[in-house]
Structures are given as C-alpha cells and as structure tokens.
Amino acid sequence: MNIAFVTTFDARDPRRGSGTFYYMSQELARQGHTLHYVGPLAYRYPAGSKLIRRLHKIIPGRYVAFLDPYVGRLTGQTVAQQLAGVAYDLLLTNDVAVAGYTPTAKPVVLYTDVMITHDYSERNLPNARLAGLSPLALRLARQTLRAGLRRADLCVFPAQWVADEAAHYGVDPARVRLIPFGANIDDPGRDPAEQRRLNPGRQQFDLLFVGKDWARKGGDVAVAVAQALQQRGINATLHVVGVQHPRLAALPFVRSYGLLDKRVPAERDQLYRLYRECDAFILPSQSEGFVIAVLEAAAFGQPALAYAAHGVGVVDGVTGVLLPLGAPAGAFADVIATWLAQPESYQQLARQARDHYETSVNWATTIAALTAAMAPLLKTAR
Image 1 (cartoon, rainbow, N blue to C red):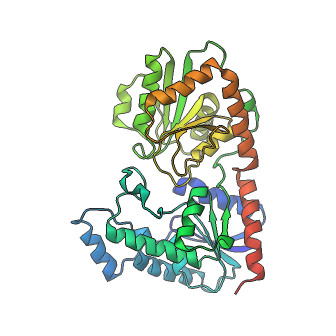
Image 2: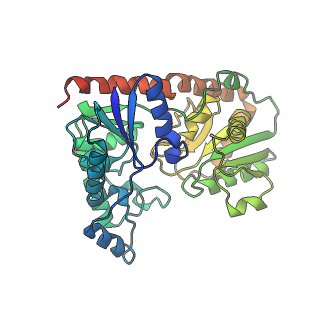
C-alpha cells in the first residue's frame, strides 16, 4: 500500500507520542508498505477559536485545541495541500480532526485511543487527560470526535472501552476494529520471563514506575505502596523512570532515573535492565487511553499492578492484577505479599504476560492485523 501517514507531531521522532506511531511506521515499512509522512502540523486558529481561547482564560474549565473543529478544519486543509500531487491509496491518521476534516477522495483510516465517554465520567478525575473541560470545550470536542469517527472509512481502536464509547457517537460497528498497539521496544525474547523467580522467604521487592506525568500515572500511590511494603518488613524499592519529582530525592527507598531515551544505547539498556530485573510494574492511573509501558513490561514477563481503569492495558489474572479504583496502598501490598508467599502464582503471571506479548501486543502482529483490515478499502475506494 501507498499510505499517507498523517500525525500532528513528527512520527519519525521516537520520543513523540510515546513512540507509538514511530514504531508503527517502522513496522509498516518493514512489511513492505510505502509511507508518505505528513507532520508535524502547526495549529492555525481562526478568529472564533482565538476568541474561545481568550475566553478560557477567564471562565472555569479547560480548552483543547486539537479537538476544536474550527482549528481542525484548517488542519485538514493543510493536510490536503501537503498531499496534493502525492499518489497514495489511503490516509492513516491518529488524529480525529484530520480524519474528520481533511478533504480527500481516498479512504480514511483512524487509529486512535482518544475518546470522551458518553457520560463524561472522566469529568471529575483530575488527572485524566481530558478531564475538566468547560461545557463549551466539551461541546466542541464532541463535535470533532463525531466528525472524525463518522467520516473515517475504518475506525481502529487499541482498547475495548474506546470501541464501546465510539458506538455512542453513531459509528457503524462494521467500520470498527479492535487492534491493540504494540510494545515500543526490541523483542527481548522469552528468557527474561522464563528466568523470573521469587524465591521462598524472599523479603526484597523491586517495583518499576514508568511515566512522564507523575500525577496522572498515580506516582504518589506508587510511593505509598513501597512505604506500605516497608512497614511490613519487606525491603521494597521503587524505581522511577520518566520523571524527576521533587519529593523523590528525600525518599531513601526510591531510585529515580529521569527520562531514558531509547535512541541512546546506554539509556535504552538501562530501561531494559529495569524491565528485566524489577519484579513488577506499577500503574495506579485513574484513567488512560491505552498504556504502552505495560506492554513493554509484558515483553519481559514482568507482571503489572494497576487500578481497574480505562485503558491501562493490564489483563486481570493474565498479565497482572487489577484493583478497584481508589483501593488503598495496602491492597497493592497485599497482592505482593501473596506473591512472596506463593511464588508459583507470580511466575505463572510472568509466563502469561510474555505469551500475551507474543500473541497480541507486538508490532508485527498489530500491523499484520491492521493491513488486513485496511485491504478491503482499496477494493471499494471512492
């Protein structure tokens, strides 16, 4: 296929968008497809949007430009201009505004984890990425979502909750596919999972936290879990990647590594070492679109602990354990204490996590499924 690959950021930069669309594009090329990159795209604001932005400096609630339909129409025009004269079979994008407002006669494929729930249940989750929108911004965002979801010839979602919510925007189920993203790493093989052990009587446990947004990812809960383990006589260490938070320096049981760049061999090796050597991944987020880091953990057979929230990507009882939203740190500590007392249950999760990576959440599998879903569009292209 000749694919117009459109993102508002530079998809050739593995640091942008968690690296997801970089790894996606690399695998598309590896499987023989030709990509015509469009992006980064600078937002342009018409007079009405400029007024809306100024208004949000004085009224309660947030405004998000990427879901403003007036901004989106200008973005769509820019995309069309950049694709003028380009021979492509279909347009693939992660941006709902691009999908909704780009004038093209070619099929449009939207592959995204961006969604606002039909009842806006994330409204009062302060760390959700689309929480706290003003009534005006929410109306505009829903208009853009509706335009993108209804215009796309194929809507691909990495998580079931996103697909379920899309139905509330009038999306025909025949145009929906559920295809998880892949892990943004080099495959470490099965050895890390097969060698993972918790020896009987062990009183040491290493937790790994990966994320740039300390509050949204539940960093304070992760710290509290390590403290709860310490209080039980378990020598717990919390390893933190992606953020340097002021309070961490004063905590002797925390090791902070900052942002590790996978393009730098030494930093990539450090991250892979942490996935290999830490005992469990912890993700106490209240709301997510679709988390990539837990897939990376699964590749190493590292079980995950998380809240049962939208998009965390942990399969309860298969790749890790989900706890009810708001469960205290002691509940996480209870799970770890059970693992230490019954290490065979932990080792089973390690093997299952690796199996899940091999069968469902690696990019080779994802792209094979994606291209199979896109192929019929070429036969019926307008």
